[in-house]
Amino acid sequence: MSDIELAAVQERFADIVWANEPIASGDLVKVCAEELNWKKPTTYTVLRKLCEKGLLQNEDGIVTSLMSKEEFYSAKSEQIIEDSYDGSLPAFIAAFTSRKKLSSKEVDEIQKLIDGFKNKG
Image (cartoon, rainbow, N blue to C red; front, side, top):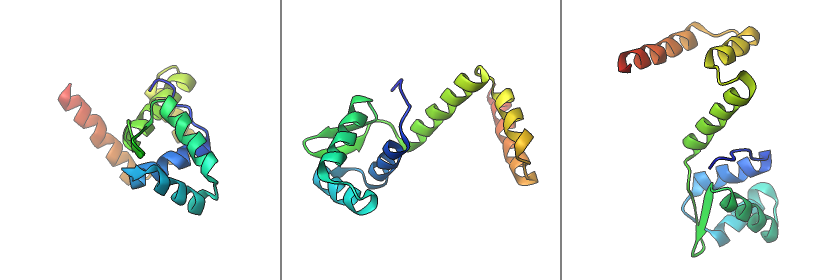
């Protein structure tokens, strides 16, 4: 899925699918009516759009994802860093930490990640 840009409502819809998959499309309509106050046509329109984007599939009335939630948000994060920081993770971290102080626990967790990457290297 090269186009990972989703509107907020589409992300919410995808979150519903990820939390309930596999889910029958009729049941998805009911969940969206309860959680999003949507009518059936709205649910099917958003489902169709996310199927066209390659995030979801609807086969024989059963809706499943083609990309996990973790894969989606990882790709989205990569795209943000690429688009906003010329692909530089250090530049992103510098910008992020200039406004938000990291706790000692967060610094330790990040250091463990870095050490793990170095050891794989």
